[in-house]
Image 1 (spheres, chains in turn orange, green):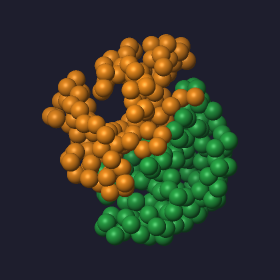
Image 2 (cartoon, chains in turn yellow, blue):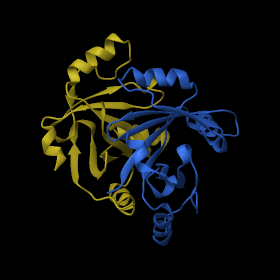
Image 3 (cartoon, chains in turn purple, yellow):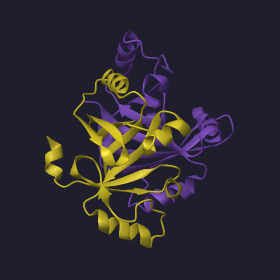
Length: 138
Length: 138
């Protein structure tokens, strides 16, 4: 069965958003800058997955464009897969529109690829393959 | 730790959306009409939670208003709690803006309450208390 990895939330103020999610009883587990997408991300785990709060570093970030167009809110849903390359090949064979034809680097040394929202009822779905799944279960 | 219950996705065509999510390898587990919100819902489980696809029955549905304003996409994220009434009291004490001050009936005999998106970085968060949690683990 597919496993949820995280729910990505686009925010303007990362510190303020972390505080809001902490008020629900969640804890900050990890914070990282992903240069390629010009974002800083913060992960807050829950049972079954994690929130990934994403704040853009500058206007070139896809998250900045999302915020300008739609305002803060859920940006994407990430599902973990074991063999990303094989899953992408399968989705291509089914005719689904992909944003990334090949895996590319994500946070925490992962490989990621996005499926186009038009293929998934308006939801931007990210597929993630982690280098070492056990390390994330701590 | 808080547990993910489901990710709610607003769609216009329920059958078409079910098919799209099935192409990812997910299976349809349950389908139900929630009269109070004038929606039909379909649940597709993954490890860690479920997608809840929501299609409005008529224009009075909050989901119809969402679709008219934002188009299809993620409508809300639902987190499962054991004692909804107590959690709501705690969030009120913290000053969070709630949509539902008291629990109200949701799908599958659950009690639900929504937190206002302005309090959660633009995300509509639903809190769910299930009548019998074991029954959902099958």
